Length: 104
Image 1: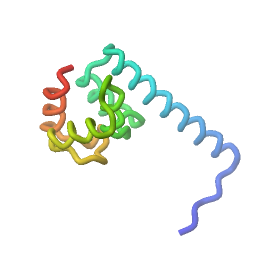
Image 2: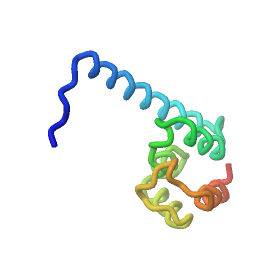
Image 3: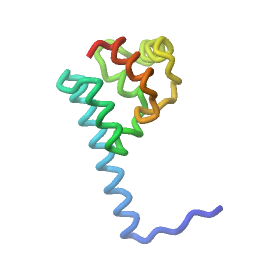
């Protein structure tokens, strides 16, 4: 199936929307890293905002001090979360387990 050719206005609108989504995710990550935002409020924002809801859980965990790819994968395995799961896709028990593990 061929993709629809976009007009220059549609392309510009898509670029703008993508930029807003990246900015929203970056702002949330920075706020979470600095401790200004709790994990519970991140989940609440993910339920409302599509851009945040589509962020991978592992990317959010890697923003924490001392958490890289390996430690983030270990945290997700301990909490029973698939490595490619996104924030909006987490179940209630997975969210609770992650909040209990992280502690903020």
